[in-house]
Image 1: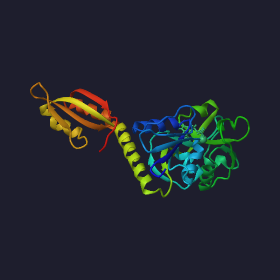
Image 2 (image 1 turned 90 degrees about the vertical axis):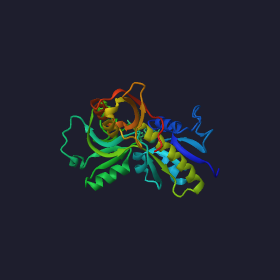
Image 3 (image 1 turned 60 degrees about the vertical axis):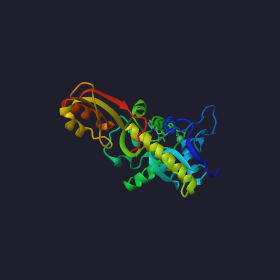
Image 4 (image 1 turned 90 degrees about the horizontal axis):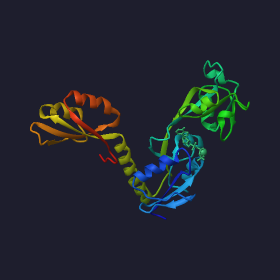
Length: 286
Ligand code: ATP
Ligand code: MG
């Protein structure tokens, strides 16, 4: 087992689909059907452990798994000794304080002397202490949103993404206390062989993520506009320019960041570009 690493991923839930999709996009083949809790890859030196997300930081800290994918919320709450290797950009959510919709909210002091239900007692306790609020923390493991309506607590501290679950339960978000996304974590002090496998995996993850945040663009341009167009889409090194069959025209190929895409397209059109094609990139190695 020296030259193989073990990765802990969530068995099922809001992390598992994106975690497994990312590893597949990294070219790693594995079988995760049939309720199997442990599964090797057929083409990469990695073995999968399918676990509850609560257990992932502990398993990685203890070295049962070498690496794992978990939400920062769970990682900070569990407070285990692990290394955060890489932010993964999915399962984005926040930990917030919420109170019944009808209540007037004047500020954090609202929570002084109140009872707050949460599955994140450590994060909440630190937050309340930092802000000098004396509140009672009531730890429950799930369905936190119903606590106020059944008289268990006057407020809650829970994960929010769109806020629709809060709304359905007659609650309103009043403070955001922590932003979270999925991260890749590792055990401290892995041997060189395992580290080399992890580096290989990180290289692939980077290529997938960079590909996703860029687009390949192809367009036609009159030769007189090439200088301006090249300055708008400088690409990785410089754009590729190929002559078209029609005299005086060229085809320009380049890469643009996904988040600048619409602005740049408009500028390209204004500069004289025609027949602009934008294509997704599967992997990108800079
Ligand atoms: P498990 O059975 O593995 O303990 P769970 O019920 O604790 O699962 P999930 O609801 O599957 O947890 O959420 C897993 C993680 O996904 C959360 O800890 C958080 O990081 C993230 N997450 C939770 N809710 C959302 C959401 N609505 N949108 C995006 N990410 C979320
Ligand atoms: Mg959990």
